[in-house]
Image (cartoon, rainbow, N blue to C red; front, side):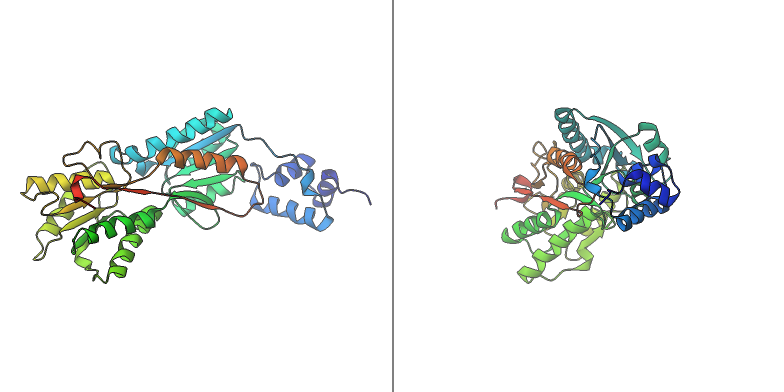
Length: 329
């Protein structure tokens, strides 16, 4: 039986052999309709896809959403980038760093840098991810999860659960949660862990104690307003779980400035274990996330991922670090 060739598929589809080859290798430079046309013809004609040589990844684009380019976010994403850089260095791969957003020319950046694969860190709008997926390049999401994409995340839900359980076991009963936008997968998961721990302990979840901090920029105004609201309640909280360490440090400072002793009057726990958590006064209890490992794992997933393999969702463990801000475990 004669083997079906790329030239045969080109003849059947009316396309050039080069276009057929790029479509079968899932490379950029064509529409989804063209790629589907080629793949349908290949399957119908019995083309042996194992004959394709796997394209070696030589360049990876590390994309960070513009909303994460803030002083607070840099404490988390800079180590993620460093982890990806080290993994690329060891593999002999070039890594480019790009800050993008819905208003930025994302596709122009991709065409300019011509990466073989894409690493997206943090929150991205579904429309941006869909546009990037149309390039046909291997993609991995870091600190985000969405159906149809391979991802690597810390165990955010377990972290929220461990922090809340620690506070409950320390005798705290009115535990507040300061969150960012729940559109962010990581924040949503941390909030779910918080609620799970309350439920399992039989503690009533008080909506007045759950606040979405409105300001995602560098300003502390949103956190200050949230803490002012919590501390002025008829029954104020005796503990606060914050969705990240930067928020927790501002919350602690506000408590101190207004005569609340941490942790005697109110315990505070953060998330991420950024560099300033251990040296804060008092030192901040938090969930340690291996941020460098997140970046490295994203690169490793890109390097070993086959084009037709199922999407993966890798979850890395987190560790509860108990310090002075929440007292003894």
